[in-house]
Length: 128
Length: 128
DNA sequence: ATGATAGTGATAGTGATTATCATTCGATAT
DNA sequence: ATATCGAATGATAATCACTATCACTATCAT
Image 1 (tube, rainbow over the protein chains, first blue to last red):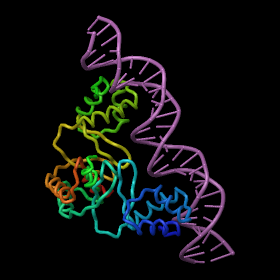
Image 2 (cartoon, chains in turn purple, yellow, red, brown; image 1 turned 90 degrees about the vertical axis):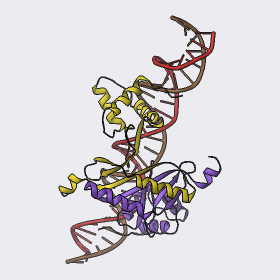
Image 3 (cartoon, helix red, strand yellow; image 1 turned 180 degrees about the vertical axis):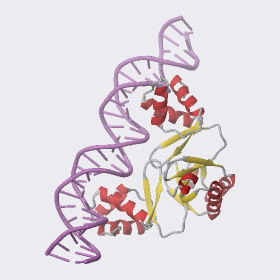
């Protein structure tokens, strides 16, 4: 049975208070700034535990995992290859098509991840 | 300017001769088996170069990159969380919806990756 | 209180990938 | 054919995100 300890509560609060997509280092650093010092291993374990419990969401980028609030409607991500910004979008029709594919293939979907890579509005305008 | 050296040609041939999704170690090992010994760094650089030139395709999984032939129609992947097998599927309708999203958001798509995680037919049947 | 169970944190270890650097290759220019 | 010079190679060290270890602590049920 998973426990919601003071450390995990602090991590959860941190994430719930913003719309950022956090990595482990950022969480540890920001907590330290607030005087809450948590071992980096505890941050990794906390993030994994919270995600497993569905209290936060995770996305796997090429280099690292990032975590965000779970109290939003399901969405996927637009990742800017120039500035690294991450936007969100909802497109339920895509999910429907995914379920169709799974059924055709007799595949039991547990989860999915859709990332669109490219240039965000700002970077596109700035020619970068 | 990128060069298509003997080593890169060997990597490319290896990948083009099968429908597998290769990681760097597998490529190095299989080449060694054939008497072609290539430094592991060269394999990594070769795979990256070939992918950049569009001669092979890459997919980023949670732990590592895998590479496959590029001479097939575009497709996305079903990844079995039990046995690790990777199946492919085509669903052009999904791509159309992705383009719609990008246009709405003024986002310039350079690429995308859609992974469906779950149990493949075999693992589902085997209750694992 | 007591034991079982889970969590913590410092730190060592892991595994994929990248950087370094001396050497070699290969596509032009001669 | 040969010189040239940027790119590639390969052995190895380094990096970086993450996980395992382990002694210790907190929490919960009895």
